[in-house]
Amino acid sequence: METIQAQIADLKIGSGSPIVVQTMCNTHTSDVEASVSQCIRLAKAGAQMIRLTVPSMAQVESLREIKARLLEEGIDVPLVADVHFSAEIALAAAQIVEKVRINPGNFHKDHEKAQEMFAELVKVCKTNSTAVRIGLNHGSLGERITNLYGNTPLAMKEAVMEWLDMCIENDFYNVVVSLKASNTIVMVEAYRLLAKAMQEKGVVFPLHLGVTEAGNGDAGRIKSAVGISALLAEGIGNTIRVSLTEDPENEIPVAQYLADRYDHKLHSTLVSLNIEGRNAVATYCSPSKERLLLDFACDFGKRLLDRELDNVELRGSFVGEEGKEVSLDGTEFAAYLTDELLQAARRRFYRPEYIACPGCGRTMYNLESTFNEVKRRTAHLKGMVIAVMGCIVNGPGEMADADWGYVGEGNGKVSIYKGKTPLLRHVPETEAIDRLLEMIEKEKVE
Ligand code: SF4
Image (cartoon, rainbow, N blue to C red; front, side):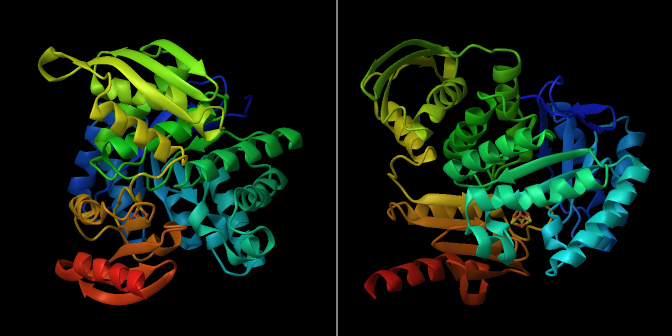
């Protein structure tokens, strides 16, 4: 899809330029040492743009220091300030780094006031040649929009179009847009609607793709690959982030694979495909488990999402550890990957659906190990949607349609949510998973 180009320092985002791979630090931005060394590792691993959270004005100063330290180290990868709620922080950060990620609708409850603040930010960005990402997530739509359109992909599209209209009115085009969701169907539909609406308007801004709160491990990789590849295959998307609840370095090879596949026509390792009706038998010969998993997700995710297929049987082989060929035919592993793929495409739920944020500088506990423990202890709750979120500021809003939520408050305390309602607050971390399970069991009895 033809888009205008955004310019982030020397990096171009938009049609005519390769897909840009980006990620986000999970360090505390106030910990300058840790943030600088993580940025260096991420840049060396291939991140072309790195985001850092800026939760307070104090951390704007840390951001300034991080930028300066990276330049001293010869690392000129563009930085993105992730700002929620505060126009004041966005204005300050826009004078330091190359790009600011905001949801202007969150600047103020009064829409007109939010518009004024956004117009102010646009002025500062123009003066400083700073780009903006307008990032709206499924879970964080404002009441004004959800009252009109529900909590739907259409609402996401409508909400962001209002801000894009403002950009056009203010003659500001250094803009990238994202409409992320944890639900792959919602995410794909939202971006498709937005792409169509922008084309009809005749001004197509570049798109940043991502599946939010995708989780970790195989499931997180498959879910991200399904959502992102479905759009890249249609020519929608100019920059990507694969969000994993892991070390952000692990995100880069997955994102790089996706960029290579759709930019450089990297071939799938699928060697044969038989389709009868809406069922497929796919045979692979893959050089690794990681490659198999991503090829499988990209080859079939979109067809499952779009209901062209109902099921895929996985056969063939991959090269396992120690270089040994591992057969897939009739194995539990092949059945597991198929289950994961069907769940990622929301066609069949064989286990709970997990929503877990990747963590960032707002996270105040060990998110990855807690998430793994929650998964271990809730594995029997098939079909339930369980969220594990790093912070109380954005977690509750971002966990969208979760049935239950484990939300870190900071200071070793956790809130337990049922849907959008906090049932327990200030639960010590050491007891929080027990309390979550007790609440779920109690609910089942009632
Ligand atoms: S929900 Fe997670 S990723 Fe989002 S701001 Fe909070 S800690 Fe960071």
